[in-house]
Length: 141
Image (cartoon, rainbow, N blue to C red; front, side, top):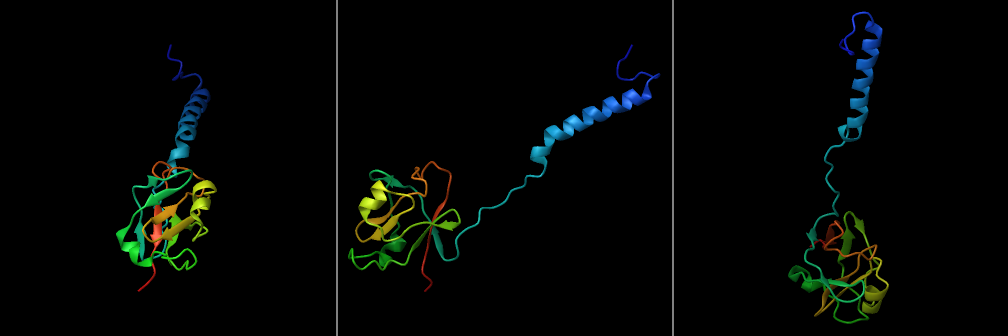
């Protein structure tokens, strides 16, 4: 005798089929509402950073030739206008000492002549592996 379609118990059949459909719906529900949402980006003009070189501690260096004109030339000048973003959020403080970038981290960065951009991530992770995007907001001309 077929246990699912039993002519003498139609109500039981309807309830059983409904339970199976509901279980399938609940199993698929977590994925049903998801759609691709692009990551927000910092305002224009901007430059995405790639290939971070580990220096020491939490510090990473990234070179970007298009940023050379904005580099600080004197430790006291601190005039570089670039803003470092992690995904869509600015991090910092900017113009931090190299020691603080290396050993404190937490988003500190400096942009110094002959060295480029020395940075740390907000959680002191490796920017090559943490899955976040790093951008520099450029000054408008």
